[in-house]
Length: 142
Image (cartoon, rainbow, N blue to C red; front, side):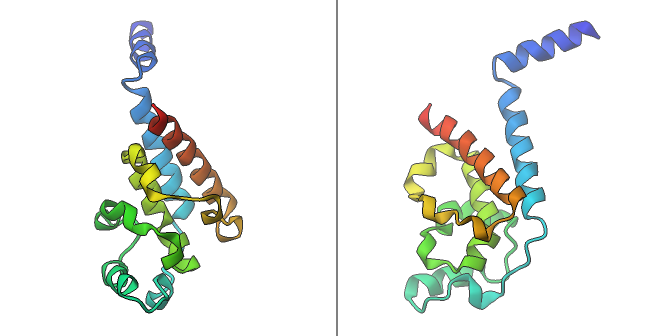
């Protein structure tokens, strides 16, 4: 048993298993923190009456944030100013999951401190956001 433990520690020290394990842990934290966020309703997703909002509304309407097609859209969650507060909170975990898998793309999203109004999120959600963005920051600078 000690030999297996030594091998596991050695592999993790080279980052082979550690990073995947950390990503899996962060994914679970995101899924748990946002699991009970109710769908905000179609009219709350993109409340503006413009062509871009109409296009985004067609894609997002009726889709759960964990739907793989939503995560693949990734950058479409922004710009923040197009999405209503309830829609932003609901689909934000999809953006976090996207960033975990594509940390180098964080800069192109243009996220700002104003995008994280603590009033929109629970303590567990804020913790998942913080931990994910710290991880993404470490990877995007590398």
